[in-house]
Image 1: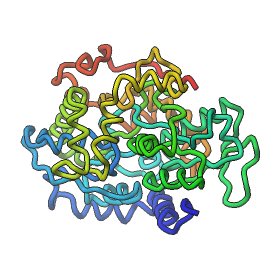
Image 2 (image 1 turned 90 degrees about the horizontal axis):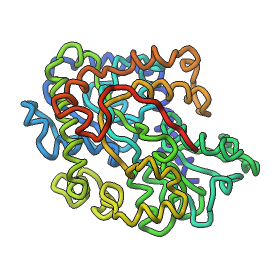
Image 3 (image 1 turned 45 degrees about the horizontal axis):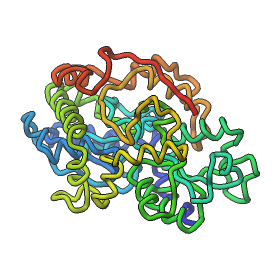
Image 4 (image 1 turned 120 degrees about the vertical axis):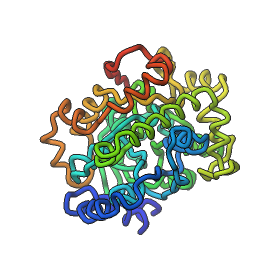
Length: 396
């Protein structure tokens, strides 16, 4: 079956090894040896998904250069294992990672790195086969997730439990009627797997949900941002060494990314063209029309999603994907709490000893992004209330 292919298993084994102190140590030593030899350029590693938008826009629109930085062309990587390996070894120095993945990296593998900002909010959905009309219809079926430590897995399990279903991982046999079998699958494999009936649904970042819609092989059952209001998905992760030893450089990196988010919010259709396979830099393999459905959807889409139930919390006025950089502590704290009750595979013992508030303080350095936000016009520039605190809202 597609989700059991050798490539996927190798990636999972590599990630499992990287997220241990022993597995990460050789890469961290390589990063130390590389430090100071070629440390000045901004070297971005990314996956070709809309989660990477601010980093790619900062490069494509010259925001790094405007800050006086040298920025290499971002390096497109094919899996989370490749992203993490390139980052830990110092081959790249700025990456976007799934927010729960940074919890594992910091506390599982003891990686000396920090979250410095959010990349985006929302931007993901639960897509299902046409005959699936409710979450309860997923009972006895298989759903794909991009990684165990992902907001997708967390939100999916919230939805399943709210509907009386139990998430399981079965290598053989079929799940019971009240169970949903979870499998890890590369996002690019999800659409063909849904089309062939190997899975009943998938929950993942854009534009793969939009791709399934455009091809007519799937529909969105629920947007993740309609379950956890304004949740972070991918965050910006940087080496602690750079933050401590090159604070001016680090500040400029964050400044550029914040400016890129503001530009993206004001130029959504142009952003889709910039990121597409037809753009000058060919940042992603996706068509402009598919990216526009995510970044600049027509107003009529909202009415359709309200009617179908993909959007239930209309008062939240969530965009399909949105951009604001501040890493609210309340989110990280709630994420740590929810990860403890989320089914995952691999060693998860480190979660048991984490205090949510202490973990948020250790994982996140918000000093750079606070200064960048103030310089860009404050939180009001992102249509948010002043202040750096909020309450988390989760409503399945």
